[in-house]
Image (cartoon, rainbow, N blue to C red):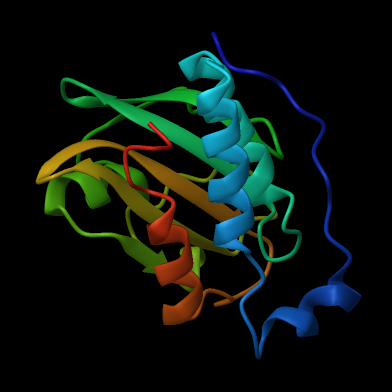
Length: 170
């Protein structure tokens, strides 16, 4: 409902080793593209979709990227790139995404199968990174990154995704 459906790209496991030692995501490139879109008065929905596409386009370990915005006590999927999900709405406190909002803390889950309250989007996801989108202390939504690789998100990679979570994306 209201979000673009994009073809899923299944990563080549042989490429997994390339992101172990250095960050994959080029935040400066993503921010530059988003600022350009903003300066050209691209509508909010298209900005969110573009953000998801640019992040997921970095390749492995970014299998799928979902942008959920907070509406009351519920996260609502507004844009994504990668695999489809049936989780268009997630209550605050439920799953990794809902836990991030409930605790006010980003979540970097190296092995989702070991997480008791994990909500499976698909059978291939092995890890998940959720970074909150904020305006000051107010939580607006989140960037939810799923990966088919175990524990791929280093603190540096998490920091890079966090630089994209400022209101220029929302």
